[in-house]
Length: 116
Image 1 (cartoon, rainbow, N blue to C red):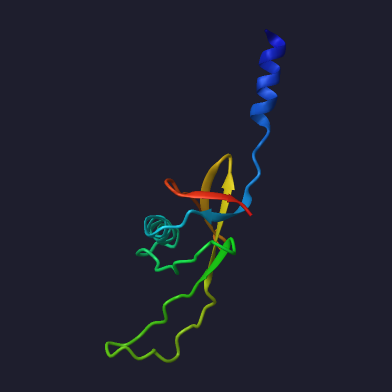
Image 2 (image 1 turned 45 degrees about the vertical axis):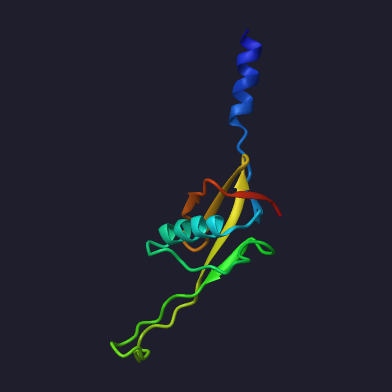
């Protein structure tokens, strides 16, 4: 009995390792789920993604919106920042998106992804 407990405890201590992933069976629904999840990570509204997002690469670059005036012209003198990167990965059979700059991670239910 003690041996079984120790064995189970050792297995529980082994941490799973995240692995880069690609989206399986893409659909409009899976893209909308990802857009909402990435919007949550970036503390913004849902992000518009291409139909082929995460099909060939596990990382996507999200360009930051540049400040504009009320006529839609870019404002001068504002800081120009690099885009954010977001990665798709899998761990323990579940899919996650990660904002690479902050390290924030969000579980993405109802999509299928496989290790790259």
